[in-house]
Image 1: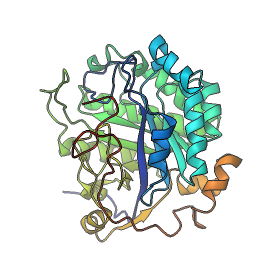
Image 2 (image 1 turned 90 degrees about the horizontal axis):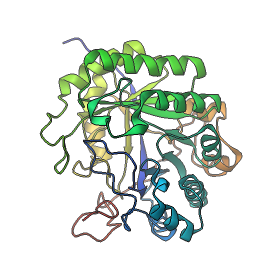
Image 3 (image 1 turned 180 degrees about the horizontal axis):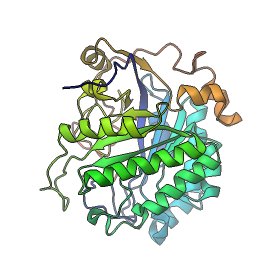
Length: 354
């Protein structure tokens, strides 16, 4: 079997995964993250977020994830107003400032946003993200208006205009064809060649979830991930990192073209795939030898060196970044891989879920 060139250095980041709200307007048929916007437990309060930030476990990144447009629901909108915010973006900006005050670099993924909303978030985020998932309409997105690929590509273009270091990716095995995966990667490459801001592309394999309409759908095989990695390396410019989530796919895929293993937390779950625990850093180092694992920040080194960040972000970033733009002196993070943020038995649960 032919292998891609030896990767040498493989990057990763240490993060806190903070599901600021699971409330979501969309209804993707594979998702267990979402909850109804009227669910009273679907929104983390500022006090809950501050509790997470106070115990970062060596993380440099505060990863804020929300559902799509929950404030369209009047119950959710009123709940935000009681907290003192007019919109989800208002709240996300406040959370970004809170993370910066704790010395962490925010990376937010709030779904489809306007140019003005991206501009506001840029001031308090080191980077932003939005998964393309697929550049073609799919049946699993039939009740998810924000998954219109034209909207998502527009957000990516707007982020490029604002010089925002940006993370995107595709979701493999949700009913798309190999040709559609290729078209998705080509669409991302076109946007990057125009603006130069795509720092990484996540190649995420689908894992079926119980209690979803797609629970009987087959899991994405590693063969699919391997073939897509090789395709992506041919299509995407070499400066764009290719990430495989190490809790969903084999870290050894770094020898097939991947050069990043994403965010790993010692304090929080992957709330999108809570059944898939994060591997320990020591395990990843062993499995990718002789490649070298190196810690980065949520903003990739080249954008640190280019100064693609706001003055507010700079205050938290400069003590964390070394002269190459990687993480300065990674902290040791002993102990358990999870912190029980929400009381639900022996392991954390998504807010508002039993």
